Length: 450
Image (cartoon, one colour):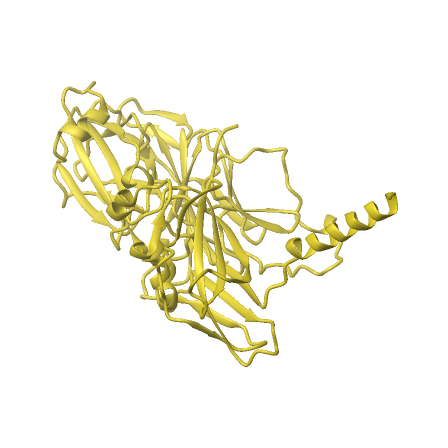
């Protein structure tokens, strides 16, 4: 009796094995190419191939095979979109042993909202913005027999790809430093600069323009956020560069007035690509003649060298007598802040120069690290010091070249690779930055606090 019971048990287990080890005649492999877009239509653009599906007919006994696809999209573990059951696209013809690549316009019908069911996500909200919300996503694709329409017959595995969708951060304002005083000059020249934070895409500088807005704050102690929401700017313009020189051609600034400024990053194609609608935080400065007339010199002994494929280090000497107050003839003061700028020496495809990227350092520092460079690329860099909001002249240009990527050899000892250095925390960590650890490149997609 016990033996017959064991035989029945093993027969039952063997009967279940095919259910857990199903072999399908078609293999589906989805591939997503970063940077990832919040717009589904971007994944069906011709010749861009941000989404590619590789279909392989493994059954060599078939002369050809026709299939249709079904897509599902999960956000944070919950399905929000899926191919509509009644959607009937043209068949996809597969040949045995030959991979078939589906991308671009071939995928467009599958990504149109009229061919999708919305589950736990508002169709109206999607139709309004055409953008997916931020979050962790899983895109899954399954192939079904095209000829059998009475019921869905699955003929492939369910291939999935994982990715994270996040809008780019708005610009980070650099100079003039918030809350500083800027002296009245006969020939005004104020350099406004900001740090782009959408550098994950290599084409970001060509896809983005910036709207600079300047406001008067009356009274001076008014909340600057209220100022930008309730008053018209005294000056507004757009530029493709991450800086603006405010001079004689712009409206004259009034002595003793507190000004508010902000920058908005705008995607040229009109897409909602930035958080907070692209608006930076607001900053203020006072345009005041009461600021002492200061002569600011150059920074001494400025040097730069590449320290890795994507890293460089800048050094300079502190100078305790770099500035002089003319009104009191008081000398012997050092800088209270530094600005370091760097860019590629090569030209853009349109023949123009690359925009400067800038970082700020306190007057007590004599070293700066840059971590977002490109391998095998020549850069030029310069720096200036400032005192009480007055900038000195730039140093001479210094050039350096980053080394080419080191090829990773299978079996090579891990200690020969670049090691992570936890002894000195980074000054800043932004989405889009590329870090190195143990010979691997780590791309920062999101920054949070535990």
